[in-house]
Length: 456
Image (cartoon, rainbow, N blue to C red; front, side):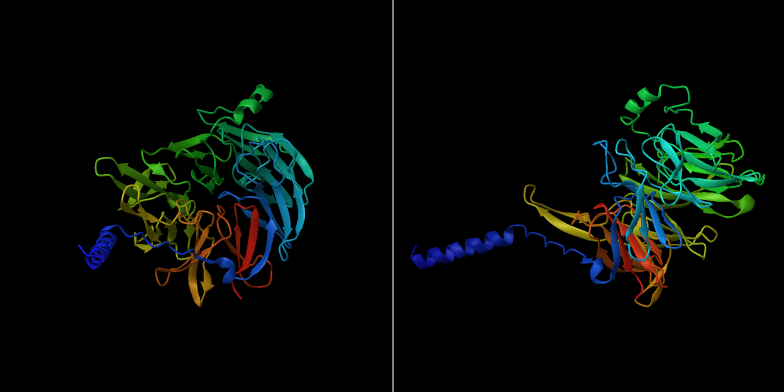
C-alpha cells in the first residue's frame, strides 16, 4: 500500500472510531447569580439557619437564632451560635447572646411574647431573655429543643410550650418559668428531675433522637374553648395533646413515609390537618404519593394518590384562596381540599452526563430534595402571583443553593437564580429594611444572611 492509501485508511479509521465512540454530554451552565438581578440591601454574618428557624421583626430589629458554623458542634464551642440581633435597615450587628463558650448553643426558633424572648437550644436549656440579651431565667430540659416555642391560652393565662427531641412536651408560666404541666412519650429516653444530670449530659449528645422536631399546630380539638396541640414527630407520628393539662388525646401513625409538616384546614368542628405521605412498591418499583386528611379525632382519609418521585418539601403555603401549595423534588402541587382540584407545575431540570468507566450516559435532576417555599406571593416582572421555591443545593453545582420563581397564574417556572451558598432556611418575603417595598431574605450555609431588594 502506498503512502497516499495509508493516509486515507488512517483518516477513515479515525473518523469511524470518532463516530462509534460515545459523545460526552455537554456540561450544563450554572444559573445566573441572584445578586446580578436583585440588588443586595445588606448582608450580615449570623451563622447557619435551619428549616425550623423563624425571623422575629420588631420596629427596627431583626432577631434570629443561629446554628453557628455547623449543625453539629463536635468541637464543643462555636462563636456564631446563639441569638443574633441586627438592624433591619442596614444589617448592622446590634447584639449576640446566649452563646456560652462551652456547650452546644445552637438556637433555631424564637418566640417574642410581651417584650420577652423565649427559645431553647441544643445544650438542653430553655431561656427567657430581654431583646438585648439579658437572661431573665434559664431552666434545664430533657433534651435539645429544635423548634420555635408557641403561646397557649389556657383559662385566663398564657403558657409557653416547648418540646424536646427526646420526647417531652412542657408548658411553663412565662414570667418565672414555672412548669404548668409536662407530657412524655412512651418511648421517652431523656432526663427527668431526680435523674443524674451529669451522666445524661455525657450520653445525650451521642444519641439520635426521633421525637419532637418541629413546632406544633394549635387547634381546639375537643371544642372546650382551650387550644390543643398537634405535633408531627420526626419519625412520622402525629400526637394530639390537651392544652389544659398536657394529657394525650390521640396518636396517628402511618405505614408510609411522611413529610415533616402538617397543614391546618377548616375551622371549628371541621378543623383537620393535611399531611403528605409516600409508599415505595418493591414489586413495581414505583412510588405513590398521597395527600392524607387527619380530622380532629385522629381519623385519616386519603384525598389524593398520584405517582411521584423524590423527597417532599419541608414546608407548605396556604394561599388566600384556600389552595395549599406543596413541593416534591421536581414538581409544585396546588391543591384545594374542598373541590379536590389540583394542578402540577413542573420544576424539573434534568441534565445528562457520560460515564466513561461504564460506557453509559446517565440523566440526573439538578433539583435538590426537601425544597422550601417562601411565605407569600409577590410581584416579579409584572406578575403578582409569583412564589419563591428554594432548592437547598444544585446537584450539578453543589456549592450553590437555587431560588426558583414560579408564576401561579401562568403555571410555569419563570427563572432560576444561584445563591452564593447552599441554604436550608425558607425564603422570607417581607419589607425587611422598612422602605415600603418587599425584600427577599435568605440565609446561606456559609454563615451569612442576605437581604435582597425584591421590588425596585
